[in-house]
Length: 416
Image (cartoon, rainbow, N blue to C red; front, side, top):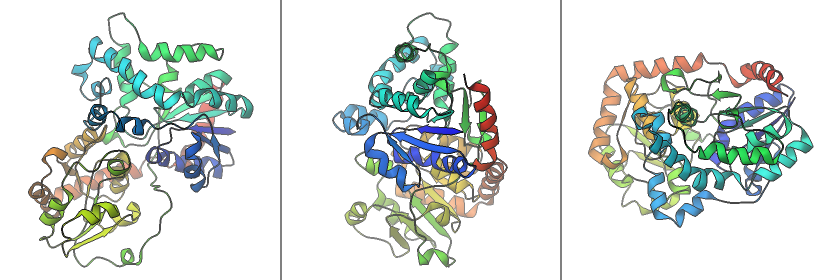
């Protein structure tokens, strides 16, 4: 069958899609990945065939010119999606105001550059299945236009699906900004709106049950397979560490999409510098150059493949990005989360609730607080025992290759 992936030009999001795209290819299916033209190089670098559609735009560059919006984007889940974690917020006023704002200032900005050319390509290539990540509603619009089966592929908790379910349960008639927007595009291409345009005909979920939130939808579980782009394993990583190794990685979002980290890196390094550990910190060259000093027990590298680094670690400190947390969890490693963006606080809280790690809000992540948490992870064995339970749960999930037959069945069932 022909499978078309549709994604916004976001490297971290796209990397969640790559293992499934390759599983489909190695099963003999024809796979294409559609995104904005400037993103084609990232797609082809993963060995996949790119389809540039639409025009280039950058929502994060727009945020740079709106400081208030940037601060809001770093404050955890925005409304209405915060209601997925705290259902007490699911009032008509809160949900409608959130949808009204984010349809205009987020979802349209992500999707309007793609829609018309994505539909045109879908009509030309005629995919059997369109797989779209939760923000790329252009994928469901294109599927509706040609009668293809279509699926969402999650990269974290399903805050989008759960929020939509809460909204539909409201006992209060009124406008539906998301449905009204998608209805206009569906009718433009000869189709009618249906709820699967928001939540997919089925949803591929990469998180284990311990970390998952779910709506009343059809989910296809799939084990997270680490992919971080081109990588080389350095020689020092092939030698077992002489002391407990702790990794510090706070993700690319802070430096690529925002103004920088929300914690004092130098203070954290100083606080950990007196521990009998080997600290490996992945920091940009700019961040490293700004440090007043580097402790003797600390190695700073701009990048190292996390799946190889985590396998040698006793603990990992990170920002609670879903891919970072999942990759580390595959090794049963206790984790200290210092979240600062979108879904990260919710993921950090959930992981800590299962006793597999600790979480510190980035506003309170001082050097002493991080040092105390790291010592607890190193010295209290229940953290590792619980981390290994999550590892076992993940390893019991089907791999990307193993879910391909299920996707074939669902595609046949949903094609029109």
